[in-house]
Amino acid sequence: MQDILKKSAIAQFNSIKNKEIKAVELTQATIERIKSVDEKLGAFNSLTEETALNTAKMVDEKVAKGEELPLLAGVPLALKDNMNLIGSKTTASSKILENFVSPYNATVTQKLLDNLVPIVGKANLDEFAMGSSNENSAFKKVHNPWNLNKVPGGSSGGSAAAVAACESALALGSDTGGSIRLPASFCGIVGMKPTYGKVSRYGLIAFASSLDQIGPFARTVEDAAALLEVISGYDKHDSTSLKLPVENYRNTINNDIKGMKIGVVKELVGEGLAADVSKAIQNAIDTYKSLGAEVVEISLPNIKHSIGIYYILATAECSSNLARFDGVKYGYRTKNSKNLLEMYCKTRAEGFGPEVKRRIMLGTYALSSGYYDAYYKKAQQMRRVVTNDFLAAFEKVDVLIAPTCPNTAFDLGSKTEDPLAMYLTDIATIGANLAGIPALSVPAGFDKDGMPIGLQIMSPQLTEAKLFNVAYKFEQAHDYYTKLAEV
Ligand code: GLN
Image (cartoon, rainbow, N blue to C red):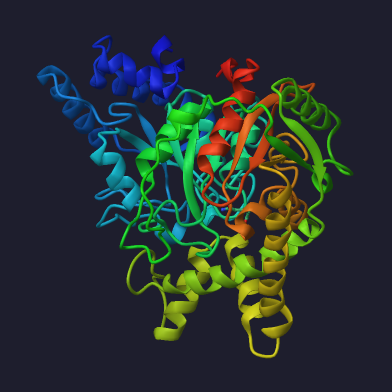
């Protein structure tokens, strides 16, 4: 592998600006890297070589003319395969969309293209982003670059594995209940979910619209901050998009955090935590104290209900969002049906995988008359209660810390027969989606088997600048982020 591929996105960007490497060469080296290792990893569903090289060429032309480059121009990126890139397949790792070619760009994709970021391919995921291990892809599993027998985490497992294995410097993922942060933590990289509404969801295949948010993956906090700057901003195509100016997070990333108040979430550091994860959290507490922050214990008394709330709301929303895949407008259609109703039923029976069907059935049940008040309405009320816990906590502290996951990456196949065990891996991440707050996972060490551990940091809505600042200070106090998986 060429050394440049191991560098951070900002370092790659600077090398292009300073004419040390051509953008086309960097994109070619990245694609070669993917071709040499991805058979082992399964991180990509498809490559978009032509788009990437065309974009890179435009970067080199600008450099030759002495023009200023937009942020991250020329730095290769992997796009999760549930976001549209015009003229290429968007499959959501589902058989039902296996041959769907997008006629338009997602807003995030357009922003990347505007900034001349070469999109090298579409990253594998759990089907329709439903899962925690990337084993629900209809096409192939993703393997963790640190140990090929382990899961990369999900649902954005391909995006995380790609960045961890230097198949790209950057990736985008989507996070509905932890799908950016969990794979970031399992793969030893940075993954960040912005405030709900910061990044447009237009052109992202909807899973649970009130929870979905697109965010960056990178190997450093600074890179993730830069990528969020590129993709965020108001969009008239998304009615939940916030009308706020795009911020520069890198300006304040190295601010002193002396005197800052950091809360450790009591409910997420107790029972059920793997010993090495527990040690890593203690280490993080010590680090923050040595940086002059005040660390206190904070209770989120209702966080224990978040999984139950989430699996009612997310399934309810997905049962509605996925109704559009009926064999009529796009995607797969069954070959043998006698009438319209049979065509709908067979298309969906043949096109969706087992986990997606389970979610649609759960959600349809939760929304059905007679059960609506008992499940959906109650879950909405409880979502407010959990959000209020966060609001109360942020009255007392600036940010909250917790593990991203109580354990490190598990063996492939070890939880596939037990959906409940799989759902429980999201205990620490779902709260941020329910409350709509920004949250991030940053590398925080390794367990005894050498698997990465993630530290999760959460902050109040629209305080991304503070979140990146607190994460950066921790990152720079250690060398975990400099360690790379050997693939
Ligand atoms: N693991 C969670 C689920 O299966 C979260 C998925 C996500 O964030 N997209 O629903």
